Every structure is written in C-alpha cells, then in structure tokens.
Length: 557
Image (tube, rainbow, N blue to C red):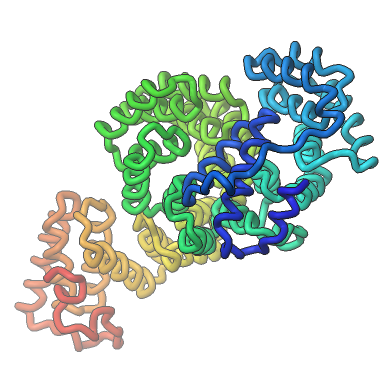
C-alpha cells in the first residue's frame, strides 16, 4: 500500500515532483506485470518512459514480500509461468489453497477473454464479496471484484467498487479505465467521489474524450504536456483521437503521421488512423498501413480492422466483414469492429445483420453515437420512421453539435409531417456548422412546401454564399436548384437585374440550362416592352439589396 499512499500525497493537478511520479509509475508497472495485468503495466511503463531517467540510487526497490507471499512463492511462481503460457485452468489448479493476494489477479485474464462462465462468475462474486466485507482486498483485488460485477451486469455496484479501487490504489490505470467505460454522461461523472491525485487528470482527459467533450479533453491533455509529459505517445495518440472525434481530419492525420514516426511499430489506435484514411479515400496510404501492421502482428484486433477498412474502400464488402468478424473473435468486446461490421452489412443490404451488429456495439458501449446513428439509418431503410426517430435522438444526445445527427432528425420529422420540428433541426444543423452543406437546402425546400417564398429565398442565398465563400469546387447538384429558385423568385418580384444574374448562373449547369435561357429570353422581352421592377407590384425587400451587384453578393468575383 506504500505506493498508494505516496500517490495520494500528490494532489490532483500537482505535477511539481516528476521524479516522484516516475518512481510511482515504475513501481506500479512492476506490480501490475507481476499480477498478469499487462495493459496496465504497459500504460505505466510508457508514461514513465516519457519522463527523464532516474539515477540508480533513486530507482524504486522491489515490492516487499509478506509472510503469506513467502509461503506461497513456489506455487505462485509455477502458476504464473502457466498463466503466461495461457494455460489458465492449469494455473488455477496449482493456486488452490494459496492465501497470497497476488493469486487473486490470476483470475483476471481468463475472465476478460470470456473463458469464465456465468456460474463461475457468481461463485467468484460470492468469494470476493466475503473478502470485500472483511476488508481483505487490496487495490488489485477490488479491481477484480469490479470486473466480476461488471460482467454480471451489476453496473451500480461495479462503479462503487472501481471508485473504491481508485482510492486504495490510485496508480492502477485499469481501474480508472473500467470506471470510464461505465460512465454514460457528465452528470454521472459529477456525482463520483474520486481520489485527489494526479492520476485523476489523466482519467478526466480520457472520459472527456469518450463523452465527446473534446474542448475540455484537449485542454486537459495540453496541461499534461505542459506539466512534463510532452514525450508521451499515449497523450499524442489521445489528442489525435480527439481531433478525429470532432472530424478535424487534417489535424488528426498530421498527428497520427507524427506518432508513426515516433513509434513506428505501434498498433494501438491505428484502426482510428485507418478510419481517417478511409474517409479521405487515401488508398495507397491505407494499403501501406495494412501491410505494415500485418508484418508487425496480423493477429491483433486493430490489424484486422485496418485490413477490413482497406477492403471496404475497395468495395469488397464481404472480405471487409470477414476481417471485422476475425477482430471480434480475438476480442468480442472490441467496439470499433462491431460498428464497422454494421456499416459493411448496410453496404451489403443485409439490414437484419447490420441491426444485430449495431446492437452489440451499444451493449459494449452505450456512448457509441455511430451505432445509434447506424440503427437510425437501418430503420430508415426499413421505412420505420418512429424507430428511426428514437435512434437518431439518442445519437443527437451523444453528439448535440454534430450537424449530421440534426439533419437526420430533421428528415425524420419531415417524414412524420412534424414540419415545425424539422425546421428547428435544419436551422440548428446550419447554426452548429453544417458539415455536408445540406441543412439550408432542406430548410429552403421545406419553406417552399409551406409557400414561404421569402424565407426559402433567404435560405438559398445563405447556401450559395456558404458554398462559394469556403472555396469548394461546386459539385453540389443543389446549387443549380438554388439558382433556379432564386431566378424564379426575383422574376415574380419583377427584380429583373437579380433574376437575370441568377438565370445566367443557371446556364452554367446542365440540369437548369434550358430553364435559365428561357427565363433570360422572358426578361429581355419584358424589358423591351418597357416593364420595370417598380410598376403595379407590392414592395418586396430584395435579398441582395444591400450589396451592389448580385455577383459580389454571391461571391462570384
């Protein structure tokens, strides 16, 4: 418990003594490995590597043995060798009768691999519950107890035990990570009584990323870098994931490429990197990544997901689904593989399999907005709008500022003839930053349906402004639709200059060329007859009245 006590001595956000923090990390890394907790040991070791080396005199001593440890040393050493060779039942057999707390953790690996049946889990829960009441469990033992409770779907009890584990042994990252997986929203986080330790800062940064509170997460990670962890590849990878989550693709790609230079044989998070390459249709880079990871370790879940993404980009969806299935055989709780497999089944028009995959993803992590959104899309294809609305709402709750969720919700409300709600969703999607540049068009068409011509014109004007101001190549089919509507709108208002400008732009598009020419001929004919925009019509405020020249307003110059 000494390490736990030292850890508690440095409060939350206190990184003044980095040498002491490094000692703690080296100590807990060794203790984790001793108990078969390889991932926690690796995390602590990577973080320790980012700090300056310690002189020999300051290196932490090996953990002291208790009387029980000494008595069970031979049996434990034998069992640990079997455990490392993945002979779990054999290891458990030779640990019978051992009293040492170390042996508790050798239950963990088969537990996580799904090799412990419910009956055995219940027995393990009874055994650990007795020890818990008798206060015989250390931080690692409490962690094991929490995992058993989580596997039995006793979430509330599991959260309490993981919080207790974090208090008893704050340095054990595994307990924080398990706790993170059970927290569903920020309100839930507020009510947790967490230990006041520097490890809490890493936990908060991680949970903010998971809860899509990206701005707060990036601030936390920047403060950790400033505190002295600038060389930490873990922090760099988490920052890249954060940018991926807010769809800042260029920034995320840049950070991942830098990470690959620093740690070329890294496999963690490479599936997220492959998602970015997929979105950008970067086939050569994705192919290189897939081959590279295959050479490093082709039996890792991340490798299987990267290969799956590669085949998906080549439209070989059956092969892609096969590799996602392989990933799930390696780790049935791997969230990304379930979601990606759902996407592949959608591509193959296998809606029932897609629904099953997305539901599995939600079982693993209820915060996965992609799975909720995927279910919404699936039920939309099945023409079940009420189901569709429910799943899109859940996705929107998780990503309130994601325009894609809002546009999907708007379309759903439109199908249910709830037009007021649909208008609110489309406007909100535009306000938060419309990724696909479609919210204003959909809002304009809704105004058209309701004969609200002036509002429709305003929306089309804003849409055209956005398309041209951001310098995109105009490939949007809706640009021609916008110009056609505006040309007709100004023509009805007898604003010939504006109508003529929009009709000329219509001539640049194949689908509106003839209508544009016909309108220009009509305008010319009316002008020749001496018609003006000020006779026998009510006053209408021109949408581009405040700017001299329609071309400047739309950004054509």
